[in-house]
Image (tube, rainbow, N blue to C red):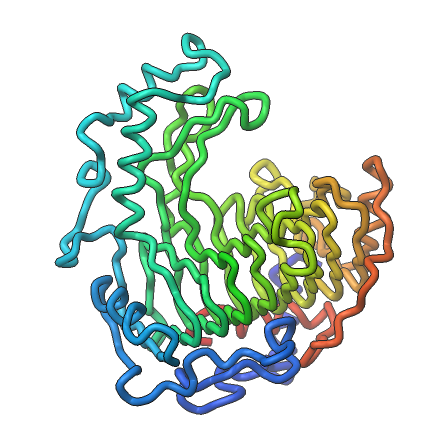
Length: 428
């Protein structure tokens, strides 16, 4: 059976197999709290965000200056921020649009940078000197506008179906934060850095993610959409794509107790990083994350890539169309303990199933209940661990040393396409 017919069958099933409603734990979307068993963010104190906000700490924002003001007001007090329409990040203090040229330091230009650090003449040495410093200053100018910090006891929720944070990076640094019903789009870096030592051929690296969790705890990311906003057509310099996007959603620097549910992450390469260093600086015993009922569509890699954390990955839908743009889905990093179950993969007929998992110095992976629809055919059960071990060395073990307990509902993998396509993303 071809995929369209197969998906049609699931759509019919969706009439009776419905996902938990958007307002499952409250009526006012700003007062919604995480369910008592809904993943790692439900552990210990649970996650309530700004649901207890007083009337004076509830704001509706339509532009960057208003969002920045709402986030900075009454630090630590519960707050609810409603987003209406599109909030543009690349603007000045008066919300007037700013271009990349507006952020550039007078001593910086891309043509000069390309001429100065061409590997053919500069060599395989990281850029340094006045021009690289000017790039860093330019990047810092943009960061002042596009990076906004989210403190503790905060709920940010989009109103309607089109609430969008465009060109912004939300950086969550506090405890007890809820982010729901938002489109995160095109957090782009105007001033990527050339790193000749990143891979054998070098790479362009950019600075901003759509959403960063940095040392944050008790965070619920739910019914959101993450993408480059179609702004992914970039030129090639030094034989490598001039990459202006970094991650869509990164969970790093000892962040802990996070639930990521019913989101759409699509059309991006490096998608979700859980743990950003192999060194056990602050991540041991942390980075406990639950991912469930998310759609990963046309994603190149990192869905997710994990270091250290106990990460529960269940009931997610992976849709892969172009094998040339695909690297892997589950990245098994240093000391990672991924517990994957009941996930559904739609992949091309030519994609080796051993490629769905990638080795990043980890040693174990639990993966059960996986279904794969390959080349549009009817889905079949696949042992991801066996497929990986058959194609790669060293083998990964199956004992991750823990079993998830905070699960509101574990759906069968065959129901995942209907459930996720019907319920994931804003306004659903």
